[in-house]
Length: 424
Image (cartoon, rainbow, N blue to C red; front, side, top):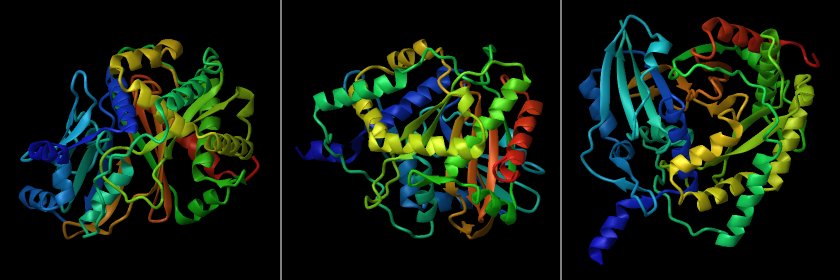
């Protein structure tokens, strides 16, 4: 009995949302991409040695715990996290004249590891690249991890909670969610398609707006249906940009289909580090609904409100609570067979604020860049965040599906539309 208690203290069952994350990770790898990895580059004002950095990182109990965490996936029983000891930190060093993003962010396949740290030695300074596997930690968890280096305390262990609904009620909700997702799935989707079978080859473009430009962009956010969302403005802009791009290439327009991460963590619930607590809100627009940015925002806010009232995001996880007993290859077949791998027009991520600390390891932080994952279908991910009160947008893309010149065109169009006068 005593040994069983010790074992349970070292292991925690994966939640339904973690199973969903494992599925994304599996799908990306099957599609020729790398693991579902988010990358955080922290540029420091002065140099640091590898030994000092390692010592600083491993002196943090939360960071050390993450390094020592693995996923146990037995053939019959449920997957679970195992908290071990003396696991080796994935660590590497690079010396360079300057930072080339497409090179720095290229090697992001962590396999089953929770994270990897790379130290970049520059001429008079250095940069720290933290690559994290989202099966273990989400963006909020990364923020909490960084804050913990400044002696902030967090409850990084979740408590296992029983399912709120019975099996049959969850099964009913699962059917309801499936009906929503399969509705009109035969309709063609507007997306940037590619017939190439090559693995994902990643590249990145970024642009930072000034404080004045950021304030103007924020003034364009439409409040409707009790929702005022920067994400709605950005997603609306992405739709118009991709619509023009497809038409310029003489492509055919179909419906626009995309997702927005939806945080399920209760505000009063303690934050924790392991696992993701989000599902997705799903959006569909007819091609003729992609008009001006104000009208699209209004429609997106409407769909957001409808899905929040219908508890669509929780129902997706309740479906996962039923399907998690099936192997991931079966899930992959279920996802790709109906839609032939083209589930979305684009991928989108929004990080509210990335500069959450001013120094790290005793060095002043000059810049922070957070890069989202890049997939094959869709082959483009739009990322955005506020940094020091300024909006930064990024385009992460697969060069086997989109050329760099085409990506530059997309970014130029995105900048122009975000800065154009209202009602245009």
